[in-house]
Image 1 (cartoon, helix red, strand yellow):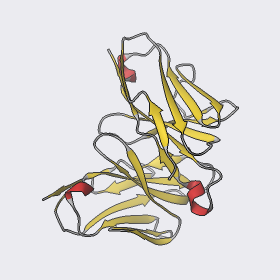
Image 2 (image 1 turned 90 degrees about the vertical axis):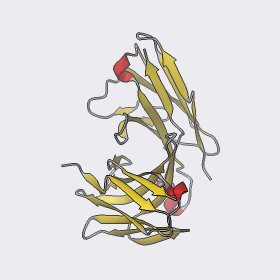
Image 3 (image 1 turned 45 degrees about the vertical axis):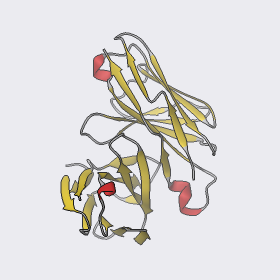
Image 4 (image 1 turned 90 degrees about the horizontal axis):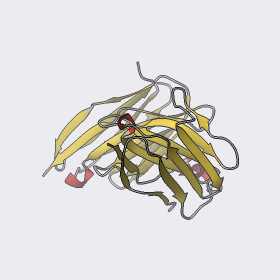
Length: 109
Length: 120
């Protein structure tokens, strides 16, 4: 079992739909990152969470430390949101990130 | 915002040659940089942590003599794939943290655009 698990692996949505991507982790963490990787490979850091909830535009990220679970929500999805979304957990000690396998999101117009 | 560049963006080489990939932090000084490898349809795997002025810390299973890392300055880390073979073909990505960034931004990793390596 991976230390960081994401679901679903693949997600196809219609433009405008509300999207949720889930991330569960089995280790103690100091922070959880949500990353976006576009088809060309470039990676953008979307959020870093250690508690609670963060919002940036149409993106919302939440984390429940007790349940070791985080979610990334996209409201009013758009085809340009199509990408791979990756959660990564940073351990309690050190800088190393452990990555989930990623969720491939495709938003159709 | 913080920017990390990589060069080259892609490289094709013959088996047995060595390839050097550069990772630069353009607008901040990075005491620590990270090198990742990503195979098709797989997630990123940390290869090593590059520390300015000292030896890199390699992850288990990564050959330090094959993947040479040099972090000679606060803005540049290089990864050299020595005697590359077809199985080394992959997408190599670096990231860096800005230790002087305030608050939570200190923990944010900024990723380079990646380098695609194809070994024939």
